[in-house]
Length: 147
Image 1 (cartoon, rainbow, N blue to C red):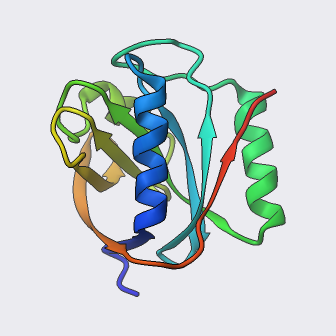
Image 2 (tube, helix red, strand yellow):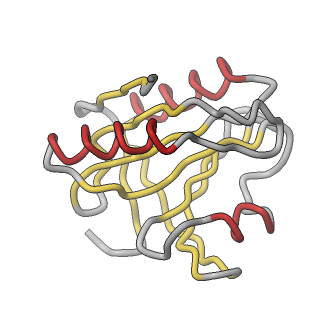
């Protein structure tokens, strides 16, 4: 699989959309894991900032998700979050707070339907779009990470 493409199932895309709608009016967020560039699992994380334009996740929730990802022999492919009322383009805050260029950023916009989803490779304050392929079928697992 090319490094500039990420593949997820239509089932996983629908689960991301449902999570996003359930968190309204606030942003939803979480981790996406898999192998290579194929997404196998998503971990919904609680946004403790309760904000329509920011997200914050407690360290304990991230640690729990990272442990579960490791147990599944997967790796973190992306950090995802939603933009409830804006385009699926990284904000300056998104770029400043993205922890590493080793992990992609995925944004789902709820501004229009069907909900656009975009993926980016982030390098400091710049970003490059990464193609997303939504594939029918397959097995995708969703996990809610709570304390």
